[in-house]
Image (cartoon, rainbow, N blue to C red; front, side, top):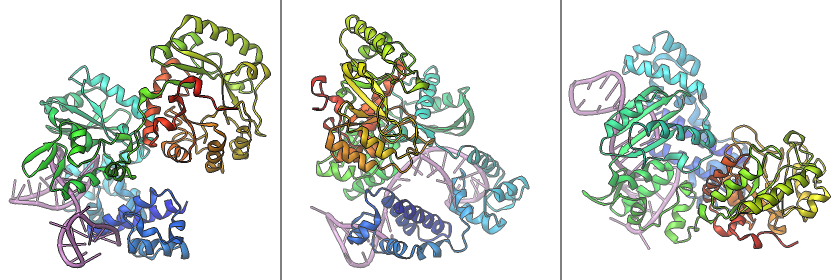
Length: 565
DNA sequence: GCCGTTTTCGGCCCGACTGTTTTCAGTCG
């Protein structure tokens, strides 16, 4: 996609200009331009053709000319000029903790360092210590910074981040009061990957809380430890940043540390125009503090309604909030049930009874048990005989466990020709059928899926793109737009699968789906009773995709759930 | 380089921590 390429070039221009010590606002302009292009919903070539490019906030005459030049000549002179004399491999070193443009320039000038290998050598051969401003501690910190950069260039998936956050709270909770602790940052915004964890704890004894964190046995190295702020690396190389704030500043601190950075910059700009200053301790008019105890208060001081954390990406939410058009974001409690769940009859871990009981305990009004059908051999798919046996077990669970309506469900496979492995016994009795592609990811998946959607028995397409977060890209050549169009026309639901390793549809894709009138199914994709909790994550991801109750099919009562056949 | 409900020129977000400094620059989030 040409948008991503242009965004990348603008980012590199910003890095190069910064390295050269150019006007920092010009640097900022390119950096913002890079983000603006990356966030576009449309292809830039369309905007150029319709002369709407400069309507995009952050794109003015200069950047528009750069883009037009790139589209017509496949090169960008601003990029070539900016990068002249700046090795690309040098700019990548910005990722090493402790190295910014100034120190990079100094290392380049004094030691002719141009890449990571050169930096590693210079540190080993003790040459860095000779450069003015590089004392022994800084050199040591760079040595570790390089090591860490090499080891963990990758970010954590949301799933890893959630597991680590629970581990930290569990250990830290034995030392200090963590009842009001919150993980802010990208974890609270539900980004698909997190670079590090931002932990926020209200307390008057900052030093003690920071010290308690640094003492945990999972901590491998302490990067910083002050009265209000501490940073540590834990055993698996991940970084945890802790901030301790007074309880009456918690709202302001939450805003500040939840971000995103771009969202916060916009908030501060708005504040400044109103003669207000906003920081992690509150909103101030001169010396007087006018807000800060709750997030709602902070937004109200700027005449804005509270914006859900998952939406804070500066992708139009601030304008929508200002204009009163912010959608009423989905709340977890509005989800009435889960319609994609496996039991030990196929590849789930828990029996029907335990799974149903867990759903009842969670207040689900309905639950579809969608074990795999027979062709999913690896998943011990249901044969007609085993389908009948499971049906008897479901009937017993219905009698014994009140409160939750259990549906006879099935997950069928979309085969190489777009057929589904639905057998007559299931066709006769199933109350909810989901379909997915499980093999042949390179074989005409779009056409197969469209064909499967013609089958009246199919209620939903699950994990529609087939991707795994950070591990697998999804079906080759997949045309999501074609599937969205068909889903909107036929009423077949598309799933937002909240398995943190899948997140499929993604929040952004779900937003596109909802905008086109597709009915979105938010489900856990559970393979065990405890996985049912993921539905809460699903609700958060739906908010990230700007979904409302009306966009999500499983907010409806069961009787109005299924489409007309 | 971008932008305008105080502006077409003069602004452009804020604070903590570290290390190397003798009062502050650089980096980070």
